[in-house]
Image (cartoon, rainbow, N blue to C red; front, side, top):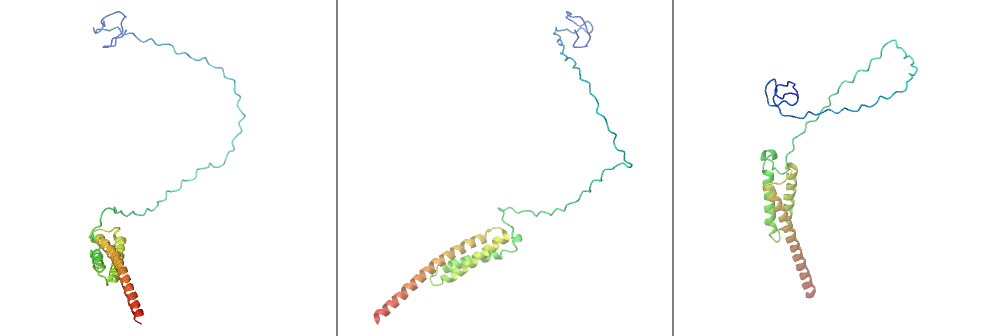
Length: 186
């Protein structure tokens, strides 16, 4: 056995190490089992193939040099503005386009409420919508006054069309009434 404290070897059956006096617990030493070894296999003799002499060159061949790396230019990437963020007034230029869209929307709503001037409301509504499209092309989206002006222009355009249709029907009925009363007069 071997002492776990000092490592000295002593006989089995001792309770204490004779060298350092440490109490020794009887620990069973693992017995190494023999590993089976395979029997060597006799190899058949191998005959060498006849070797031809390699041709001798007058000058040694050197490998071709590797091509030099080529730098590829990379175009700079412009930063992308998020869709949900409204651009600042300085990015748009000035707020005059948004104000004009709002003005066209208000004017088209006012003329949509009048019976005989609904054609003017259609014109102002169409101008407001075209300016809103221009604003969208410049800024990417509508916001603030431009968005409200677009909805007013659209509402004024639709209202003016309805009032214009009612005015045309009224005029048509009046013409038919006048023609009918004139025909019955003769």
